[in-house]
Image: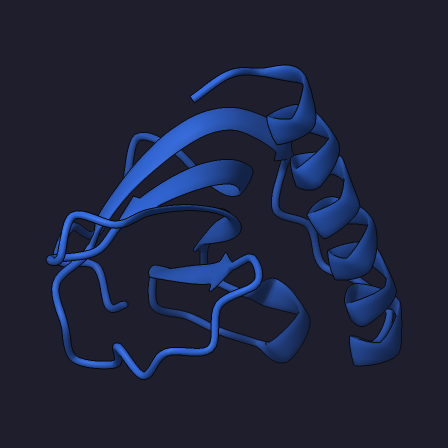
Amino acid sequence: IRLQRQVNPIKGVYAVKVRLKSGELFSGVANIGQRPTVNGVKQLLEVHIFDFNQQIYGENIEVEFCRKIRDEIKFLSVDVLKEQIGKDVQTARNYFSTVSG
């Protein structure tokens, strides 16, 4: 999701709740920032919804930032980034398993 602001008040990786236009609510993990590992320059919001396989590209969604997992950092390689994403997903899943709603 391309963001309209040049500077956003938050950056990093977060455990998130995502509400679809249908009203369904899902847990997930999101990165908000510039994606420095792949030399990104524009601010983007990337959201991974857990256990979800519907096609919703182009639809409006609501994203609630529940807990910060870590700051956005530049990794040495895409493989190292992928490994960290797996850890971030597990951290977010663990967080949601300890809170209600």
